[in-house]
Length: 344
Image 1 (spheres, one colour):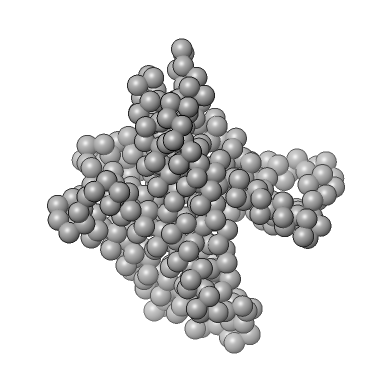
Image 2: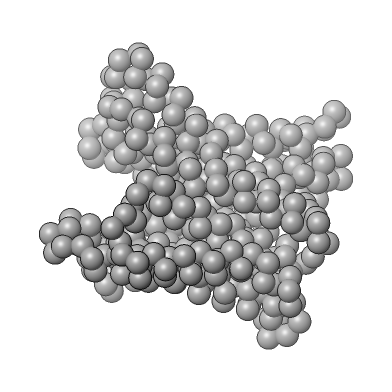
């Protein structure tokens, strides 16, 4: 039980980092969204994952040797990363067409469910008995918590004026939004599918002398490389379309340094969620159910801490007592979901 608690704390620390990763955006100046997104992506999906992967390398071995031990597994991990990159891009569109509350709830709820249950099905586990049923019930609690927070968001939107609603969701389109939100959730879940596909590489890292704490890091690198390919292609296309390609170096030197530093900060904070997931999972090995449920745990914590930041930044100010109570209930459900499978 103590190891499980330690694992949950480590995953929570990483999740808090991810939930804080969007705060540095406000400090970036003179760049369009695609400029910031690409540069922070270099740090989040290439630089820091590479540094993390190097922690799994010991004397007498090399990162290339670890990554090439199973070419098929490596390609699958990168391929799932490309699909995950699509999820990241469509996630923003889901909120554009449905609003933050409904769009985020559908996308993250789908991501938590598919990212947790599909790997179990791939292993041949039954979801109607034993540990599979515990996993299914745990995911159900997670989705219920996310849905409750989504309902709190809808209550908050009802307190807004018509002008504020149109400004918040000016492109509202229910059918299109639902399809995109589901697509975003399924594609985002591919990150965990990539981690599972790269299991032979993780095992090779352990056999090569890597500490269990860092053995997942080379696999994380493969998945994020795939995600970078997708996001880089989109950002470059946007640079061309919007004429923002020159913006990277056209800002004054002080602003350029400022932007690079805050992009690096955003990148390391974002990467911390998966670094923490890998380290935290090493403490969950004694509980197969909690190990399998770790992806859903990460999604639960991401939603919880994102709303904590929303409270700190006063995004829920003036929402009303009922909305506050529903939000608190949703967060309590998510917190309960972290340990629910272990209670069964």
